Length: 287
Image 1 (cartoon, rainbow, N blue to C red):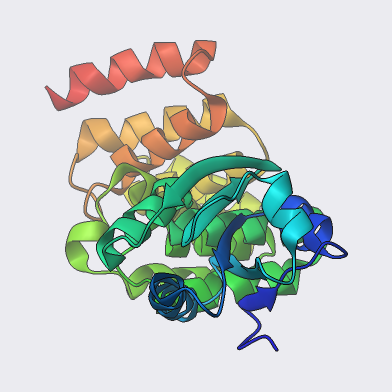
Image 2: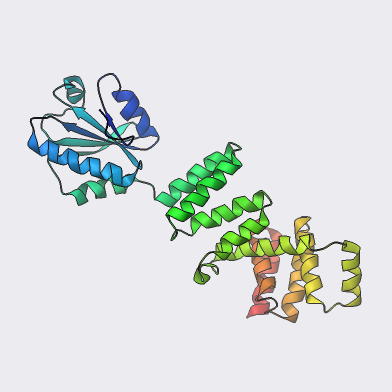
């Protein structure tokens, strides 16, 4: 019987399904063994422990060669112990003889996606299928299980923003260590949130326009105007408002204007004509 959901028994009848098909979705390690071969029992003990430790990041399939001679013959197994690693329907590693546990681990790690990548891929798959709550859950759980991987909370914040759950996105970013918040990607996310928060705070656009006309040096009003322009996809007007702030006070609200410019550059892409124009303007103002 199988020891756990990560360890299954292979036979001529289920081998293609358990191994070949599953290897197209992830790694499958096949352990060829026999009850009379002491070394193969030692190998199996190590491989089962690894399968449990990795908690499903690879599937272990055990094949008793005494009972499944056809499978052993199909894959040229002539000595025990032997194990083969399958990926995308093919054997990618073939190991004969008992190896140190570290060698088995290194072999598996060589072909595994980092856990953070698996989390983000699973979340993206759920999101693209319209399962937005599931995508959020996958990322939230991934962030807890791998707290040192900052890509996971960054992706979580992006997804929350797409769902207009801005306060939750801000909370996610606030939990990150201070040194991480200044990375380019996270600074850009924070700038987008600043824009959205500022735009949501404007109750009367006409009153804001009158305020700017009466007080052209009011930098907070300029930032609110930039935010409104951005959410209305009026990128050039948003850039112009941010440049006004930058010329007056580069450190306004801890460099909010500069972060805002970079966020818009990121949105438009480096080849956009506005980015080329205003990136030069930004460079002149900060140097």
